[in-house]
Image 1 (cartoon, rainbow, N blue to C red):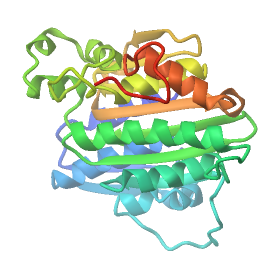
Image 2: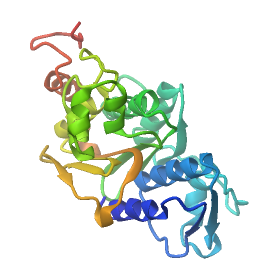
Image 3: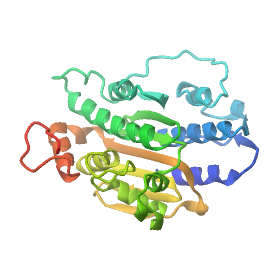
Image 4: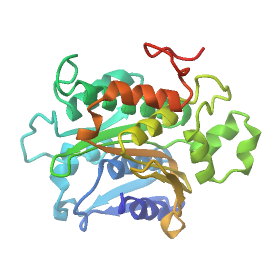
Length: 300
């Protein structure tokens, strides 16, 4: 995640320019978080009727990868493909628009990260459920609260044993969502403080306290339980949670900002061996279950 924030800061330097040129000649490596943030940002520019030009794709070392991940297609800069596409199952999920079919995309994301896990007794079943929950909760947040378009992607890094999921939108951001919901206390928050508030149990931009603000709360709870990483970027705010479970506000490099919300989570495959217990504990910690409740019953 170290290179992601400088990349986002670079995207924010275009200001109000009517014509934007993106030079890909020096691009060597990119994460799912950067991919969805790029697509969401370019989509925002295009909706604002700005001109966006992709330069030097013929000199980019990973143009084929960008094509396989459907980045260029989503940005309206599609190129002829000089390769054969193969099944991405178990390796990656190309960038997808988050619409009303969140559960369907969730199945695709989980199926990529944990092939065969849709079968109840499969060894990857717990990992499949974990990936599905993380994605659908995060994606529903993007679709319901942002006021913009959301995009998602995932990738498996076998050499590191890491699973990465990322969701980005080009909407109004967390703090503004709180303000628009009529929550007066949000006016005095920084963007970073608003992110921390969104991670807290039962805090929602819908303006109602019960069973509404579960998305980021549950995702952060699962990140803690799996000793994973979580990064949330919204406006000028950056909050990172390390494997120890501590969430901290970070400075945005070069006074950058991200117009929307980006959520990136990564966890090690071996950390999800007991998903039922992890999810139950995460729900307890986020206030969604009464202590001693059985069978995953939610609070009324």
